[in-house]
Length: 180
Image (tube, rainbow, N blue to C red; front, side):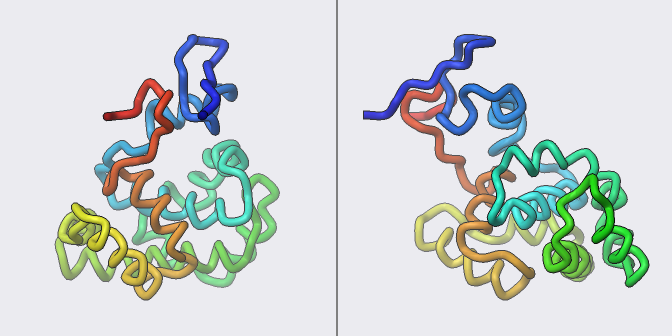
């Protein structure tokens, strides 16, 4: 039986991972599974998922304001133009997660988003065109994202798709946000 985790600040039962930490609870309640309305917002969420690989989500949330600033607000056109100078600046920026491969993946992924936007009007339009109403359709997105973007394996892709509201996020049965 699942443990009922209640936030001591507001008394609401949440998913265990977000129940007792105010930063995680705020993300769980206000961002996770909510539609993202800009391509920059999608690049930011995709990047957060890439940077989370091997780390805790809390570390990513703590570092998110610095990541947002360091990556020029995640504007795809600006990030895609980052060269060696910007890469070295990011690798040496102690405020962010300084994994060179993840930074390089973010720059690459910004360029991919621009190419998709040029073809489809926006990255969001491309994403909307990807069917995700059945388990088979969702499963077909995993290899698509792995082939299209860097650092996007099946688990990272699933977390991104849940995080941006493309597929419903999983809430534990006792969570106040769980649906029947």
